[in-house]
Length: 221
Image (cartoon, rainbow, N blue to C red; front, side, top):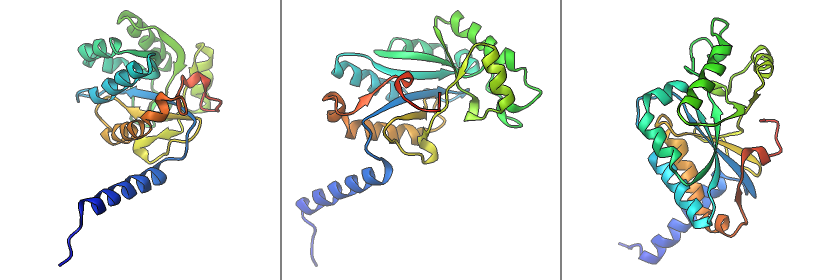
């Protein structure tokens, strides 16, 4: 009976990783990372924030990251919020609504008080030491033309994403990546961390750049 040598096993591992990378990712010169904090009773994804903190320190500058936070998550996880605030990150804080309604098509539900969902969370974010940007991420990335007009009238802009990793979307050049840092979608976090670790040398050498989503030329903003 033939046995497989360690060298053959190493070769198989390299081939597997190469096939995984080619299957899951296109070559990206630059992309933006955004992290959603929807309401959840699960612990936050400390492994994600810790690695981004670690990578920024190796780069010698904090990584730009967009964090979309809901008011309900802020109330549920005050200690975890403080840990995120202390990370070595250049965070753009994004409004993700006050209560993150889901029933009947998220914020498109006509019974939802949209102004309260937007402005109520702005108040709560500020009360917790955050500096809200002008960007708003709709729960589920669901928004009607009516809600977009209401958002514009309030003085805010929507932020979408084209690479929701847990839903099978791929990181491409110029992508705005979406993962959940609230513990609800560990699959997406695992995919992102695997990608970042695989490409860490290129990121450190500047061949691949993690940029602020504002620098991405896309209709997702």
